[in-house]
Length: 255
Image (cartoon, rainbow, N blue to C red; front, side, top):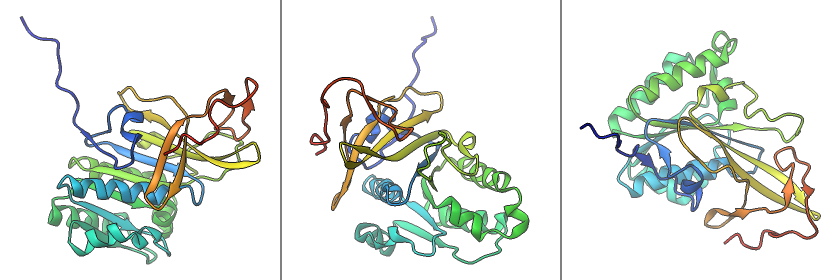
């Protein structure tokens, strides 16, 4: 009689404590991930941790630099990995590139290093690097790039700047959320006259994942995820509402 059991889907560790459990056990192999958040929320730190975790597990990576000030390269650990040729860099901070040029340079580095993890930081820089003809249909250009990368089995992490206007819950100004297999969103909120950061996993295609909104902070060791902020609602909308007297969690549990 045939067995109904299936082998667990292989997953990659993210390199941020507690984030794997939020994703349902890590990021499924071959998936694309969008990390969306406002400036200073830690998107590039999360991307760097993803590459560093890969190196710890003998998985090489590639990072595509499209920002004029690539702050992730200030990360000493990631810089060492680049110097050790465990992470390749595609530095394309020049305008008027074709999508094929970018994809070929990425594929060249991926093949050279046999890389399994790719970071695109960021989508806004990627858009500016494209020639005008390719910017006119940015979603199509992005779709071509993501498809080319995931078709060879690599995991792609992309960062996207998200304005904290709170008028809607769009996770990318480009309408690209449907192109990715998983989405992590980061937000700033104000609670008791304190600025706090929250993070949530919005989707992981065909996989169970946490539906909690988790507090997190940034310190010298990177992102530190805490537990859920209890007795509050409206957090993603930027207007937290207290459901009961007193907060069960004021952020002190973030270790």
